[in-house]
Image (cartoon, rainbow, N blue to C red; front, side, top):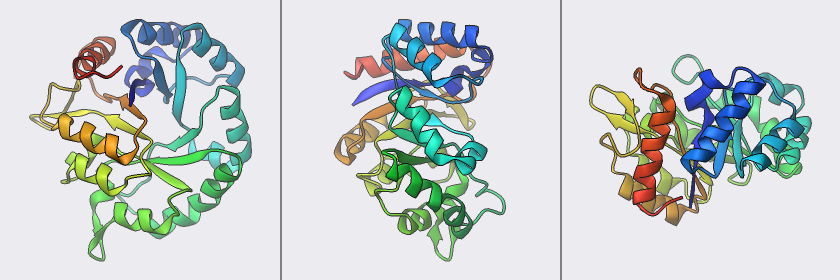
Length: 247
């Protein structure tokens, strides 16, 4: 398994192409070799490919805006071809509020199918709302059952699984074969997000289950750095993961 940086962590430093390019260099300088592109300014696919190549980076996953996915999923797939990314991600769905599994299926099954037909794999990123129970089962269970495994994968987010009252390693195990990419985010006292290894999640068990489940990329994300420098947080996460033998 390889580790990477989810650029949403440093989204305040990707608001212009100039800053985005500098951020990619800084992430590579930490030691990361893969990234997820999310929360950045608009960019041309060829521009991203050039910057990734310049810094020895690979984009392994994106979070793509719902409007773009719904407007032209085939073009989204073609854009991802340019910078060599197989996994097309959706960052959220309003399951905390009114969203239902049936609504999600109706909206995104055609998109998942179109992406599959064009060589991509649609990935859904959970928050805590997916662990609300509907008719005795979690929403995660419902959507995993509704979608064929070869059309929908899950970017299991360790923090948000725990925030939803469940066990990150358990869900990685349950979704084996559908978790090529996961998010590593630690859960600290006070429900705070923390650099990996500085909170209370049992990451050794996460790593064990991820390896067995076929995970290829573990992407560090910290939505809220609690006033600290997000690049420093990414570095501390990298150092912890390197100490466990990952790079």
